[in-house]
Image (tube, rainbow, N blue to C red; front, side, top):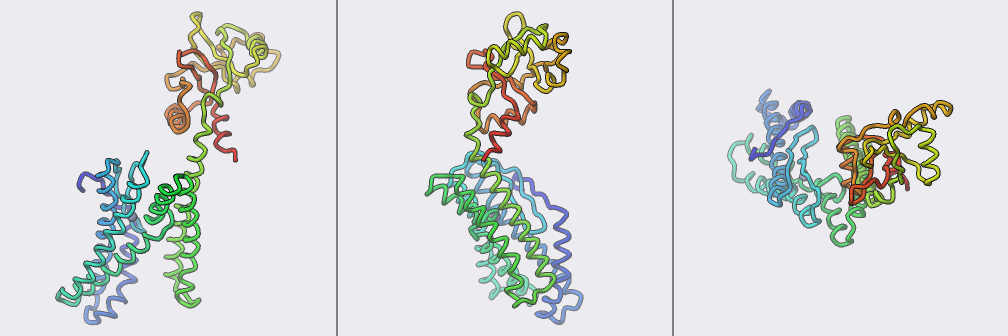
Length: 355
Ligand SMILES: [Zn+2]
């Protein structure tokens, strides 16, 4: 729709069935003459509810696109929907507007519905419009709660980022709020019913709380990871390496490395161009007494294009480069293309994992 892929998860059909089944008695309460037609009205409500969730998601998608942020698609699932936006380097202001657009549309739909309730004719239509208006107000208000992964959480994050100057602190504050809200949602059916909740209420609250908790916890992990990205300084993390000829015995190469005070070996051709990396694990697997008879080329991995990193690739771009060409070791070259050292994936992992 409007150039944006819209996916409907199969879980939606489960929820449509649940709303139809549990909604029928409610409909019958208001419209006792309908008989089995109450199921049709309840199902109609489920469809209209999802159409208004779609409007909400389009609020996010279209504002994101207006700001030039690529929108990957909209997915409708069992508890609502989400819009996938690539927010590589947004500003807090843009993030705030994109996040607010969804709930504002929901509240607008709700307001319009409440006004229209008086104007429409027919009991069934009036009932549907009123229920839908209330549902949209609830969706709008709930999503404005300042807790990740809700829209209000994104808005809180953007506000802390804008006024505190720190994007990661914004993420941590909003994600913690999300974890607290998940706990509150879980006890809500007990509070609202005076300690005697319905099974339906408990299951529903449990699902919402689980989704909130996992979203908030995931946001927290991503925030922590991003805060550690400056540690990924290739110049600092790379182990200095000694160049060795391919036919050099492993024992001799290790002796040279030891004398040069380096821990890594790079195989170079007769012109001094790097052709391979001596793998630490491969060397360790060769018994001590065999090392004088094994050449370094036999313990080396030949260089592929993605395995050569330049010194200035750091942080986020380093992670991306490593993801594109997974390897245990990478050759690091300086600005002149000369061997600088070897970057071990274990060192990068350790830098990210350290407290
Ligand atoms: Zn939203």
